[in-house]
Image (tube, rainbow, N blue to C red; front, side, top):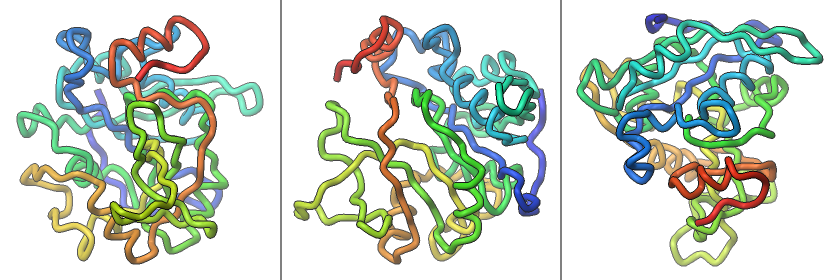
Length: 268
């Protein structure tokens, strides 16, 4: 198992930033499957859910990732160890180094999204990819050009939004013609889309004035990410794009079964 490293330097020009993978949730809606197996290790089409992201990151040239864990977290670190190698027909083998932020071991439970990211920041850097370990998005590419464009701008976050699934018809955020994510009021009739949990983030979002968690979250503060994003949206600091590739929030046993049964849309 690789311990959480410390990284404060920006990636070299042309290099990919590191990644943060969220894998700490209990998966209550997936019970009884998650009573003995953490949700990111549930198998979709022959691979654990989390491995789809890990393989895609390695192929895209990302060289390091931090995975946060809580519920049955040791199973995740035991399964993947300190690195994986994935083959790309274009670029050959890609090696991804993996470290772990064990929130369950350190604090007795998950720290929610922002709390977990803040805890892992010492192993990330000023810019990093974010993905949730319970989302299936096999067509998504962690493109180096997207990371470079984000790093060169002033946005605190860049989100990939998806058309609203049946189980989340109201969506989360609006999207302007100029590519800005919008924190729309409840009464606003403008279209909303669902946040895919795929994003590029800047570490600056987890410091004042956006976030009051101390650096590295030594006290294990629990905090969600959405309020930080909404505050940044209100200041025009969040960009977004609509992603129309295959995407499933694998939140119920029925959706998992549908994915493993073959093509088609999962049930609500």
